[in-house]
Amino acid sequence: MDSNATTGFSVSMASFTCGAICNIFSYLLFKHYNYSMVLIYGDVLMDVLIFEEAPKVYASDAQARALVVPGGSAFNTARHAARWGSNVGILGCVGTDGGYGFFMEAGQRYGINMLLTQKEGFTGTLLVRHEKGERNMWSSPNVARSYISVPEVDIDWLHISGYALFHPESSKVVQELTAKAKSNGAVLSVDAASYEPLKQHLSTFLQMTRGYDFLFANEHEMEILAKTDYYYKHVVVKQGSRGATVDGVHVEAPQVEVVSTLGAGDCFNGVFIAEVSKGAALVEACRKASAEASRWVATDFERRYF
Image (cartoon, rainbow, N blue to C red; front, side):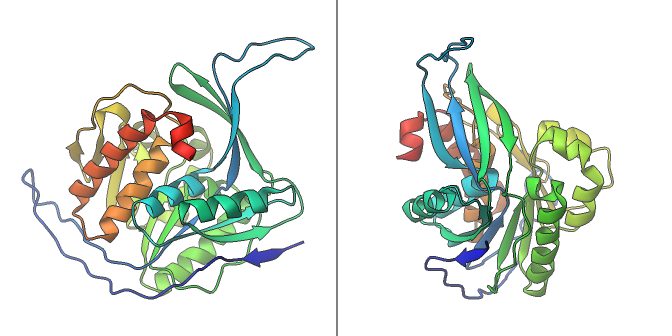
């Protein structure tokens, strides 16, 4: 069973301009992009959050604090870009288990244009256990990385969640989307996803994203990429509580009391993309993204989702 649905997805091609500014530390050139629509592709997952006070029992049950929220790297990035003012759409796949309605309602709530394909099976699920402000995750993509058709829309900025490059069906979608985006003269960006799957699928990741405009990665992921001949026009490295760098220029992050780091990198990506869309210089976009990611990790879960 395959079906496609969109909600209010209007697209117009914006002019693409680029300029350059000199940073005080060097002669680095920074591009400025103007675009009308961002399309994000990758995992759409139902996040099941379990908190550290959950007791462990054998052959019985006990009361614990747990939540089910809309998530997945692609969805999280889209919601932050939309909240920051971008016209953003998300392309993804959900199952026939109620996931379609769950995510369509969430997309409407957060102002995301949803381009979802429904396939027989279970919606992707992420189990997250929180311990001392950090999170440990176990993912079951289920239908999330199934092959889906590329929609007939103009793409001005294409952002790929790196997880989509780690499965043959979803990587085929990335290949088709990249070709379409390049024909539109779109900006291309990718997030390195996570250390372990990146290490396992490094050659595929590099081959399919070489020449993209932006790479987003954390320091752990950059340890792998730094040993390769990777090439991206701009490299953004997320450094947690120490801030981030863009093309080697460091910006500090506000110091906060951490509730949970879940989704911090996706928050950063969404805000950075939205800011660059408004014509912000890359360093300024990086500064705002770092500040918002800090605010996000200090926010309790009820206020994150409602």
